[in-house]
Length: 355
Image 1: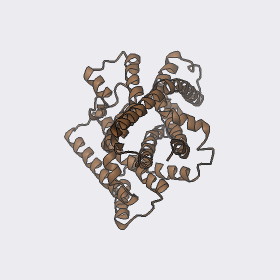
Image 2: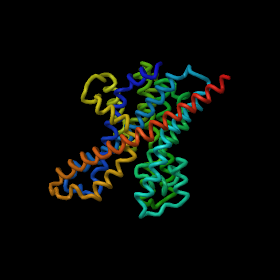
Image 3: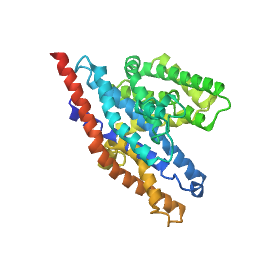
Image 4: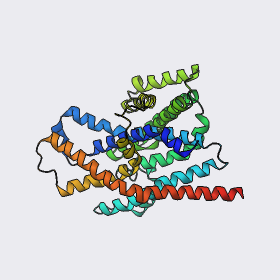
C-alpha cells in the first residue's frame, strides 16, 4: 500500500489523536488552580479527561498493526526496521524533553541513575523514576516497553477471537501482579500507589482494544468463536462485578468510540483539518504542554480573573494555543527530522542486505 494512501486512510486516526491530546491538556490545565471552586461534577470530568492517554494507547496499537500489515511484503527485516523507526520516532524529542525539563525543574535533584533510566526508556520499572523528570513521561516508558512486545502480540493476536482470549489472560496477569506488589509493599505509599496505576501491567490490556479494532475495521474480522465469547464474558464479569474496575471500564468505552468514528469519518465534528493537524503534532504537544502550563503560571496573565469558570476556560485555551505554537516548532525541527533519519537508516540497511 502506498504511503500516501495509508495516510489518507488514517486521517480520522489523526483527528482522534488530536482529541486525545486535547483531553490530556484539559485534565492538566487546572494545575495550580483551586478546582474545588468548579464543583465536584466538573472536577470529576477534568479527572476523567486523563483517559486521553489510554485513547493514545488504543490508537497506537491500531496503527502499529495496520502499518505492519501494510508493510508485511516489503522485506525480511520487518522487525529490525520496526524498532529503528520507533526509536527515531520517539527518541529525539524525548531526549530533548529530558534535558529541557532538567533545566525547567532545576530546583529538584535528579540522580544520574534516574536520568540514565529515562534516557534508556526504562524508568517505568522504578516507582521513583517512572514519572519524575518529564511530567507525564510515565506513558512514554509504557509505550516503549510495549513496542518490545509487538512481535509476540502480532503473532498471537492474529485474529479477533485470539485477541479476545489474549486480553483476558493479560488482564488476569496484570491484576495478579498488582495484588502481589500490594501485598509485599504494605503499607502502600502514595508514590507506590501512583506507580501501580502507571506501570505496564495495569496499562497493557488497553492496547489490546486497538488490536481488536484493527481486526474489525481493517480486516473485517467480526467472527468470535465460543472460546472468544467466553473469555469476553469472563473479562466483563471480573471488571464490572468482582473487581469493580472503573479504570478498565472507562477505557472499554474508547473501543466503540473509535469504531463509530471509523464508520463515519466524513463527519466534521470528529474529523477535520484542525484536529488532524493537532493529531499530527500530538506527541510534541503531549511533551511540551507542561512547559506552557508553567509559562502561564509564572507570567500570571490570568490572575485577574476571579470567576473560576472563566479562569479555567481561558487558562485551558491559552495553554493549548501556546503549546500548539511550541509543538509546531518541535515537530518540524525535531520530530520530522528524526522520523526522516530513521527511514533513511532503514533504507540504507535494506539496500545493503540486498547487495
